[in-house]
Image (cartoon, rainbow, N blue to C red; front, side, top):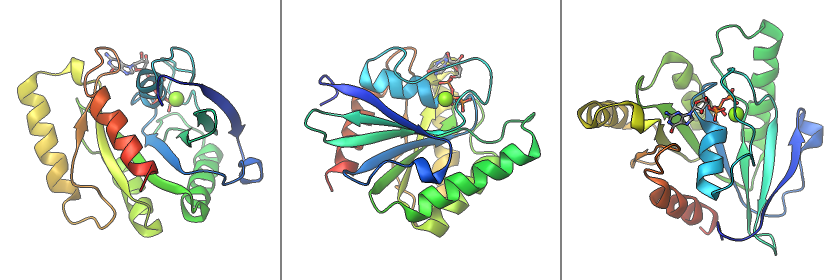
Length: 199
Ligand code: GTP
Ligand code: MG
């Protein structure tokens, strides 16, 4: 399916702009600049499908992408969090949008929570893991930018993350390490996405 048609459907800055719940969805969540949009592009092998940027806070809406024609499922690029210079009302808006989406979306089968391989889980990440657990939305941790760290460091971060999610009810125990730049972990990630939407 990832080799077939994939198209941007719409952007939802607000809940009233959400598309119909026609098919299952997999969402990409994570701190600003962690590499959500880049990973979505790498996963689908399409540069520029989701907009990427060096400036944190690039994506501020929920962006929906249709996969397959006929439509099979949707990928959702979420706005990033934990952006240091984000104004307070933007943070509040993010909380409302994301929380309402997570709680009200019956077709959301899994959220991929992206964590930077260099940093591991930070307090801001703990926040969204709490939101996901509370909303009972299944999620899986995906380490990003693995090309930026040594294999030994990657193994340590993987271990620490596994420990941090061990008792979390909605967490999938397996962690996928990826690099959008080098293509690492992409086949595994594609399989994980397909498994999520076909269950
Ligand atoms: P927001 O939309 O602001 O929440 O950011 P995002 O999570 O969508 O991040 P984005 O994909 O825009 O990437 C942020 C920066 O990280 C860009 O400069 C990317 O080129 C870089 N980047 C993303 N993935 C990788 C990777 O696997 N390796 C390396 N080295 N850089 C990456
Ligand atoms: Mg983005």
